Image 1 (cartoon, each protein chain N blue to C red):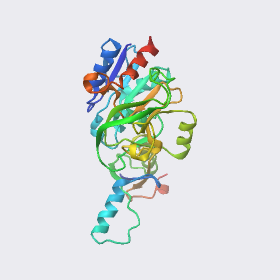
Image 2 (tube, chains in turn cyan, green):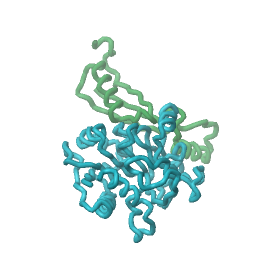
Image 3 (cartoon, rainbow over the protein chains, first blue to last red):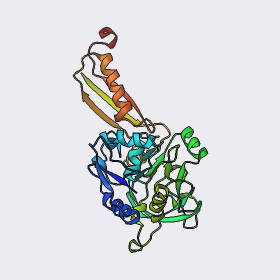
Image 4 (cartoon, chains in turn red, purple):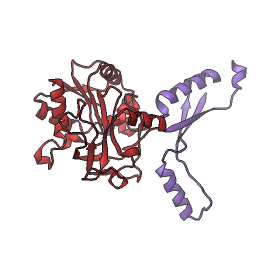
Length: 229
Length: 88
């Protein structure tokens, strides 16, 4: 798997995802910078978490207009899998590669803890190693993770099965008490129409090794390796 | 020419900061406030002197960067100079 990790000023979860990709994929990812106008020959693009450009204006707003996003967008349209984690998810929505927007958490607090997610479908490049309906535990660490979209867009996302993950109880029940940020319909991650672009707020890269206390995020990277092999 | 851009959360979009401000105002005794919506205000100094062209440019800036129209509305004021119609 030849993965590229795109780094912006203020990215800070790049090292974790680079380690996860190297550990699971067996190959060191290529690092690409925000001002780059071309991407190397790659079969996976990852936008890591952080606070790109200090979250100025809106989370991800500046990064979404960086030169490298034109190249990312072209690759996404050509079918290359693109994974945006946390700030990467915010950037993908700001860039229009994913629908909706991520607003400040409902209670205005930065939430940093493990959450449970229900895997909505297991037939995508990102989730082949999970089972549909499986509950996984991964950490979140964000202030602006409250997913929102207008009613028509939400109906389309739901109707087309484009919700990737929902916040749930350890037993898999999607309910308000298990929702860390107020996201509409408990949405923690969404796909584009072709399901080669995934954005999610939680950090699967931080649960890939037993030493991290849990490895529920590892199958996402294994799924990508399998899909791309 | 100066342009003033006001950006506010769309009606119906959750604005927890606005709610917190309303509650704080109520605790100071300012009763009778049904709702507070918090937004952003930007001032742009433009080289453009033609109001029509200035407005078109700022509209484009709002659509492409300054506002996220999924969750925000915006409106633009141009500093009072000659009326737009007179400038063609």
